[in-house]
Length: 116
Image (cartoon, rainbow, N blue to C red; front, side):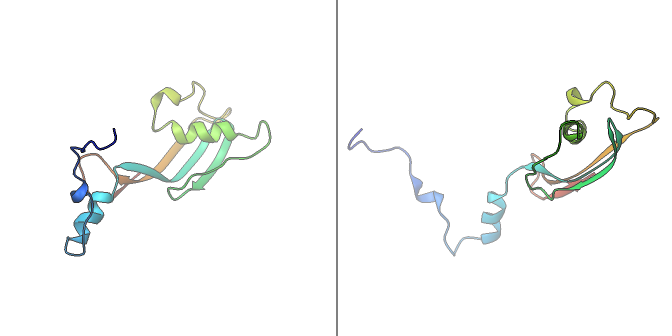
């Protein structure tokens, strides 16, 4: 291990002021989507909620039976059909909805977009 030469040449890992900064910025953008907001109505025990997260992490705190899990299922259910509960509509209601606003870069694209 001591004096062995590496086949890896790291000279190309850095960019100088002569390089195109917009190209470097685009290369640093990562693919993926972030949740901007979630709006739901009549989902399980929740009547109406609007959660604005702006792509940041959130912490949900509350008492037992305070609908924390229902809120998380509501946010996850449009993204993964395996999470949609059998009884998603609030008891006594006929309809329910969950609307997510997402923002980010999808695979194969280089521009950030919003989705609802």
